Image (cartoon, rainbow, N blue to C red; front, side):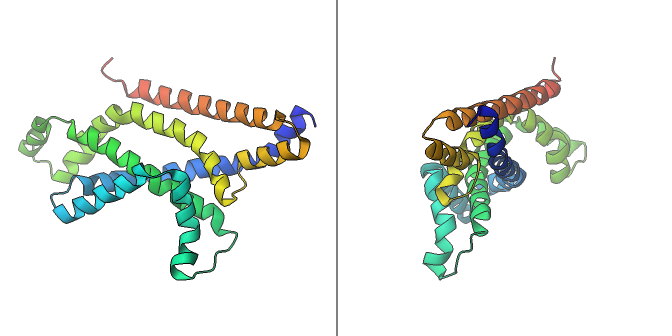
Length: 216
């Protein structure tokens, strides 16, 4: 099978990988911000719960978390699992995992802001929400963009882990072709796809970072 034919067969899997990537970012970025608020909450019970959640998500393999999300409803509650649930189980697993990492990145960015900015905003009559949305958050986004970029690039590669619950993403398609053809060509082509995907993401994030670098 030619490289072109293999690439054509991988396009469908690439679409699934991109969907996992995009949906994970859409849901995990705002969820991570909410979790960071819980992490910094003065409510000790809420703070403890959030810290435990983050510890679990960061301290266990993503592959294991995908298994738990996919098989958990059946083994814990006896709910029958449909094949359509595989994709959404992957999305839930990725979102919960990456939200924990983004939460810690947000927290570091928010806590790095000088207290004087909050005090100055209060003197000017800003409410707490206005202070955060108009003054603090724009600066936080600029500060946390490099570590967020690292996580986004890692996410591109981690989408391949969806194969463990039989989601037909690109790596699964490449493995099937490689097994059928007894050749590693499909895996090499998949590797090129991942590299190009990552390169595009890195260039986009770099452009955003430069655009936000208003100090220059």
